[in-house]
Image (cartoon, rainbow, N blue to C red):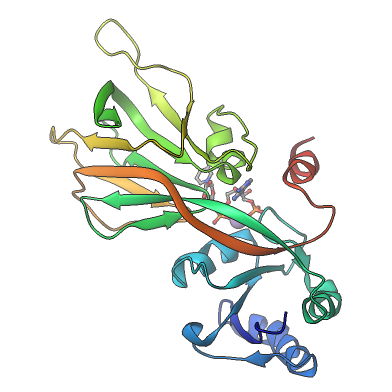
Length: 265
Ligand code: NAP
Ligand code: MN
């Protein structure tokens, strides 16, 4: 990849991590890449750590769609991290010789109270942070769909479908389906409150609106992948499949379904 030369390393700056990363930086230079210290100068962003480091790297670098992301796992390969420290040399050689395969991850776009959008690669979750239930009016394309009452809701991307969404019995979705999945967390269903009760998939042409009913229990926590938002009094979320795709360096023979098999079967 002749036009991609500038590498930014994203990692926790602890002494142990510095020790792991400094030989990487040397190796990078030997392969003719340049290590940059500003994200804006980078065209390759390498996250070093686990999947959570990768999720943080995306968030802290603003989900750049003009960069190539690389997930380098300090332990075993994960869902977003295709490489381990042992394979760095091989990885660099293939990057240099343009033998790379790139996977495109779709994201969802979340607007909180009509502010600038946030992006998620796993999911956006909204949960009550008190013992009382949370009430949410759910709209699909501005049409009222249901009134949710319970612990919260999860809106996940296809690749996030194997994470939080799976724990609440949502379906695992093929990443080639541009979509978002809406799942409930412990809804109350009785003669007064009724929700669909199953997860549902929305296409990339839909907009989901979650309006938080302000009934004194208006303190939901909003999670964007592995980060909690500090907004205390959000009134509504507008969520849709985003055209922004994240490019990630991929290992051959490591398809989504192979990962699902490896991790769960
Ligand atoms: P964490 O609490 O360290 O990890 C949560 C677990 O989710 C780990 O086993 C992690 O795998 C796994 N995971 C993350 N993304 C995944 C994906 N796309 N597919 C399959 N498994 C995935 O937090 P974290 O590592 O920063 O991950 C944040 C994610 O945790 C959130 O985006 C959310 O999906 C998930 N989460 C799950 C629950 C739940 O299931 N009840 C609750 C809260 C959050 P690794 O061990 O490889 O890191
Ligand atoms: Mn983790």
